[in-house]
Amino acid sequence: MTDTKRTATLTIDGKSYDLPIYSPTAGPDVVDIRKLYAQADVFTYDPGFTSTAACDSTITYIDGAKGELLHRGYPIDQLAEKSHYLEVCFLLLYGELPTADELLDFENRVTRHTMVHEQMMNFFKGFRRDAHPMAIMTGVIGAMSAFYHDSLDINDPQQREVAQIRMIAKMPTIAAMAFQYASGRPFVYPRNDLDYASNFLRMCFSVPAEDYEVDPILARAMDRIFTLHADHEQNASTSTVRLAGSSGANPFACVAAGIACLWGPAHGGANQACLEMLEEIGTVDRIPEFIARAKDKNDPFRLMGFGHRVYKNFDPRATVLKESADEVLDLMGIENNPKLQVAKELEKQALGDPYFKEKKLFPNVDFYSGIILEAMGFPTSMFTPIFALSRTVGWISQWKEMLDDPQLKIGRPRQLYHGETMRDYVDVEKR
View (tube, rainbow, N blue to C red):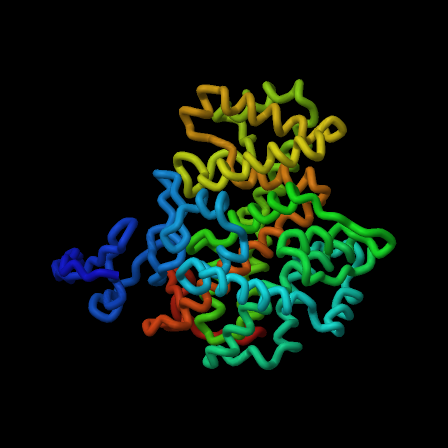
C-alpha cells in the first residue's frame, strides 16, 4: 500500500475530517476510515462489504471490467495452460514460482501427507449414507484439529507450515472418501506414484477388485479445474476464513468455516445449479424456449453458468476450461447424456445470439466445470466438495498472509441498529 499523501475531506454537521487516500499497485484507490469512528463518532454503512477493502493482500487481483485474474501477477490463463495445480499452490503460498528443485521438494512433501489418520475413518460411519458430502467434509476437516496436535500453534511458523501442507494433501483424500462412502464403496488409499489430480480421480472411481488407469485427458481437465478455482480474492468463503482466523482459531477450524460458507448456493453451488438448469431444459429442441425466457425481463428465469458478478466482460477461466470441456466430451461422448447434449447446443446458440453478446453473458467457469464433472461421472452433490478441495490452497494462503500482517486485528463489523432503545423489564404477571 502506497501513501500518496492525498486526503478526502468528509464534512459532518459543519465539521470536516481529513481521511487518507492510498493507491494500490492495481485497482481503485482506497479511503482510510479507520479513525473515523474515534474522531467523528460515526460508522460507515456497506452491506455486503462491496465497497470496503478489509485487508492488505499481495496474492490475487481481479479486474472484472477487463476480464483479468492474476495470481501474484501471473495471468490465470498462462498458469492454467503452462503450469499445474501444485506449482500454482507453491506460487500462492510462497509468492514466487518454484525452481525445479523447490517444486520437486514441495510435491514430495504434499504426496507424503495424502493419507489420513486411520481413526478418522470412524467419523464417516457416524454419517447417514445419504449425507451430503459437504456436510461430511465440514465435520471431518474440523475434526483434524483433534488428530494433528503438532500443527495447531499458529504462532509457530513450522507448525503453520505443516498444517498447510497437510490440508492441501489430505483434502482430496477426504473428498474422495466422502464420495465413496455415499456410493457404498470401500475407501481407496492414495498412491505416491500418481500426480495430484490422477490420485484424486483414482481414489474416487477405482475399486479393489480391479486396476484403474486414469486417462491423461481427464487428469489434465481435473488439474485445470483445481487450478482455475485455487483462489479468487476476497470472496465470501475466503473472507470467512480470514474472519475466523483473526480470532486466533486453528487452521483446520478456519478451513472448516470456509467450507461451510462455500456450501451456500450463491457461492460454491453455481456449477451444480447450472447442471440442474440443463436437466430442467431437458432436450435440445427446448433450448429456444429457455433462451426466450432468459431474454424476457418479466420472467424470473435466467441462464445459470452465463455471466459473472465480478467479470463484466468475460470470465478468463472459462476460455481455458472450454478447451478441456471439448476434449473431455470428445473422449467420453455425449450421445447417451441428454444434459451434455443440451449443454453443447446451448453454448452454441448463446454464443451466436446478439443479445448475449451485447449483455456480455458469456459461459463462465461454472458452466464448463459442471459439464466436465458431469461427463467424468461425478454427481452434482460432489461439485461443491471439488470446489472446496481446489480452494483450500487459496484459503490457507490468505490465512497465512493475514497472520503475518502487523496490522492484524480481530474482525468486528459494526451495524446500523434499528431495534428498541432502553426499556425496563416488566414482571410476567404485569404483562
